[in-house]
Amino acid sequence: MWKYLIGKVYVTDRSDVYSAMEGIRRAGFGQGEEFSIPQPIAFLSPLSLLLQERVQGRRAEDFFLAQNERDWALAAERCARWLARFHARGPRVERVFDVNNHLISMERWSWRLAQLGEPFTGKVARLFQGLECRASGLGGMEMCAGHGSYSPGQVILAGDRTVVFDWDGYDLADPSRDVARFIISLHRLGLGRLGSIRALDFAAEVFLKTYMATGRLDVGSRLPFYKAATCLQLAKYNLAHRVPHWREKIEAMLEEGLRILEG
Image 1 (cartoon, rainbow, N blue to C red):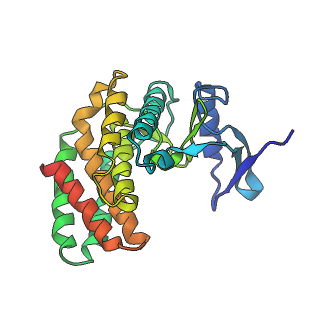
Image 2 (cartoon, rainbow, N blue to C red; image 1 turned 60 degrees about the horizontal axis):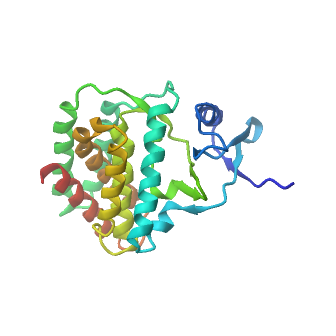
């Protein structure tokens, strides 16, 4: 019987990713579970090669591009339920997301974006200043297992099974971070593929309501900070990967970050 695998080659030793995936699998996200990950097969150290299960299915991103609210709701609900289960049951790891370190990174990204000149310079300065103010008021928060870059492009709907891949950024973090990342990724998907940053607002609302209904009500007050921070991070990504209309996309992400913080 043939087994289809995916191999991922790293520049450096990332055997820790394999170990993290093994820990997630043992925590209740195995191959036969409704909520799971691609099953890790092996890490070949001499090649820095991670071997994992190849999951047959459709990415959640494809459902959101179908322009059908029924498909949007289905995908949004399943993505939210997977994340809620992971935040509740995922293993606690030693890699901890640090907001202060993230602010240092955001300051660097802001400087690079400001080099584009106006109107970017003024907007990115206001956005970063707002993020600094919000960060000081975040307060304590119970950390939980985190994905790091949770988005519709990393979720596969395979029959009744929901599978999340790309575990390079696994960590221990405020759950609001992953929730915000998914929502802003929907806005970015709408902007880039459907012509409007507001195109997938309905899907974002379904996602958040479904997640909050699981009892994770404590994320709401921290969402504005993490959503605006994700806007800045994705604007920096557009600067590094200059796809068509990249300047317009950067400006739209900065404006969305400001709308979240100031509106």
